[in-house]
Image (cartoon, rainbow, N blue to C red; front, side, top):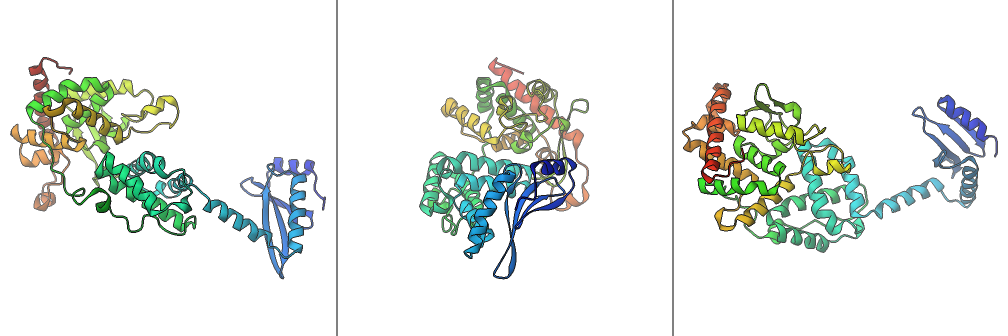
Length: 408
């Protein structure tokens, strides 16, 4: 051993050409096409050629590489396969992962291939529910009882979240099984019904807020922050899905044509582009948000953006769900509890009261016309939808004028 010098190695690194240079007795310095420098120990055991990556340079210096090679060579003389030994060490290290580490690997390896909305939703379930409960546990030690305990806490908060949280946990541990980090699946045999009850998955009746309820809601909204208020106002005025709104980027808003373009896919529940006509009131909301969003490409950037923690990312639906929960609690018996999706139902109901035709009202919500209409009627009713949403926006303004607290 001892053929190489530090001077030679620095010269090879500077040149940047792929190479393999022996230091003697099987220890070899390698430089890949990508510029990765590493030490490799080549040896024979039981008549077969083997090799072990000792480590990368400069993390492992020339002197240290020789010391490690000497230690490995002594093991080889005793019949120990040092390459196999390292593989076992790596496997044991992986099998000692915590749930948090396993979830991180799942997010890095699996989530990038999914739709943007799915990624956001799944990360939120993992971050807010899975990790706080079992993230610190060794993944291989998690039992079904641990998962049940986690889900029962979720059910105490919101029974309808049990299903998506259980789904997220199942996917994480399935990833662990595939990587041999865990030997068994702790979510096996667990059902949503056993945790949250029989009726949790039953279809929830949609809430259509009355004129009186809308007055209370619109009057109370300013108390929950201007951005949150504008989100709810836009959802109510346009009758669109919250996920589509939160994923909206400024390139999707045309202030000249007065339109909001919703791209297809990405969890927006539509396989084609949809154009939403904007009333003057809603256009004003977006103009105000343009200032509030700063340099973000998203209309509603995550609030942590300003703290530099997550970079540029859209706000999470959980934030708005929380705002509506507080709003409903504060209003008490004055307003029935409602969700972001109930704002769509409310808009659809009031469009009918305003005399808007079924076809136009359904297209306002980006619903497929279905049947023969879907085949033969290719007209998208943009002008009719603009007129309908203008009437709806005017009615909302009138409801606030009645209360004497208009903020439009």
